[in-house]
Image 1 (spheres, rainbow, N blue to C red):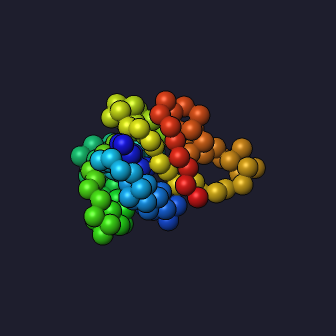
Image 2 (cartoon, rainbow, N blue to C red; image 1 turned 90 degrees about the vertical axis):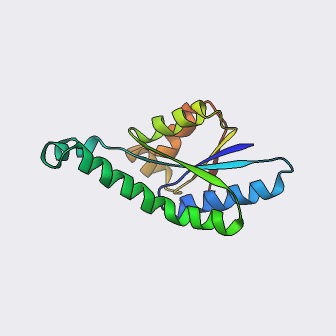
Length: 141
């Protein structure tokens, strides 16, 4: 089973990583885990004019590396082999596209557990992923 775990460095996303480890341990077949980190760069378009595209790309890569560090440590400690995908763009769209393109069997992500009212007003990346995903999604609280 191919598992894609979206992570943003939060405790919630780390719970999804730990759940993936648990799931891999329960499966009798060979499983793989891929971590994905996506950053929306729209807000940085203005900064590109002043510092250049390369500086913004380097900043986003560093940010992703930092956010993936704890998840990688947990997977390494559990002895679960993994790889990573780092993308830039609209978060929900990029995660769903990676899940489809990589032919993943399951997409795992942490739920922030916000109230329904806040989700209604602010929107939710997790909600957008669930609504538009073409692969099964597991939200981990």
